[in-house]
Image (cartoon, rainbow over all chains, first blue to last red; front, side, top):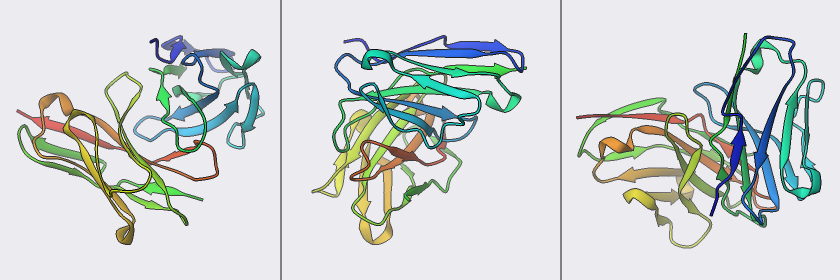
Length: 114
Length: 114
């Protein structure tokens, strides 16, 4: 069974440019998460989807970040415009949902903003 | 709100020695507790989890963890460390009634000496 797939794995852009990350969760997983992981720190939740509905986006900086999960499967996280401080790893995870189900993580997308 | 503290940022042990990684959590109700491992450039992999019942839980790769409510701790242990265990380890707490939202600690980087 395929795991959570993310692309691109690495992205280098100049500040003020836009960038987008794509995530394909494990088949059948209704819940999808985007986490931000700064260097040397633990992941921090940006947004959580239940099917196509964003049920928790309180930590998403909405002035420059946006996310969507069309048809409740794949998801895209966008940053426009990117700032130097956005350099980090963006992790996608999925789960079956329900209480305390296991989260399965992708390998992450590492963003470097110059 | 829940929080997780991993007091040790770095730990170095010799191969074959025992290991204990500390984790303290803050949460008002019964927590769900997790340990994840992250190898360089990889996503997070679940080692073990505690939901209820036996306070000593066994995980993959020979790891175990013990939930101690009185100490608000969930320390990870392994009796004999292998060189391949070198990685970053994250403790996380999940909140009942909050979906599967996990709050992660800052991580402990484990280095293994030959």
